[in-house]
Image 1 (cartoon, rainbow, N blue to C red):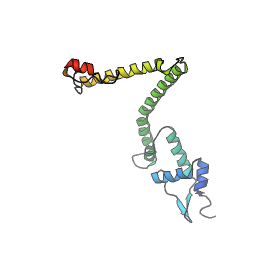
Image 2: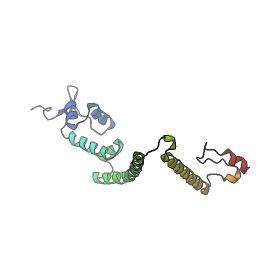
Image 3: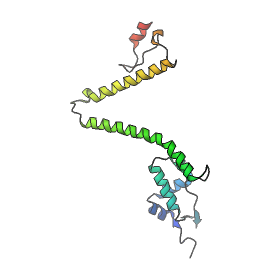
Image 4: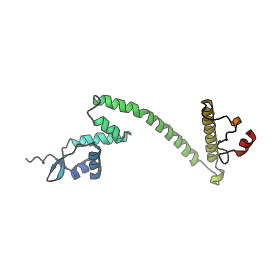
Length: 176
């Protein structure tokens, strides 16, 4: 039996893994896959590479970057379960933010789905968004002022609240 009988050509590996050959070559360049043996100039992979590809795919599906996956697959930095635990705990806050954003988008889409406005210009959704932006701007300015990073309006600073035009030139001239 020849040495290549149990090895897979790149096309066969790609087919079995459900990936493109260019993706496999990309993983090689990024260091996620070890360079395969070559016979007559063609890549030949051990069947065990399928397991590694499944791990890479699963890790990507839960949100790990290729750099994080490379770290997970590497032999440095302690046992694999410790690297996985560290990466998972690092990833959880990102996922919490993603869930919060998705929940907000879901509520917004439900609101839009119930919209009966005749024109986008009269839509309450935009009024609520404008009010939210004004609230955030006031909060940011207040926090910056408390931290000493924003001058007090009484000393002639511009009012950059999200009112019409973003800059309130009238309050600037009245403050002087």
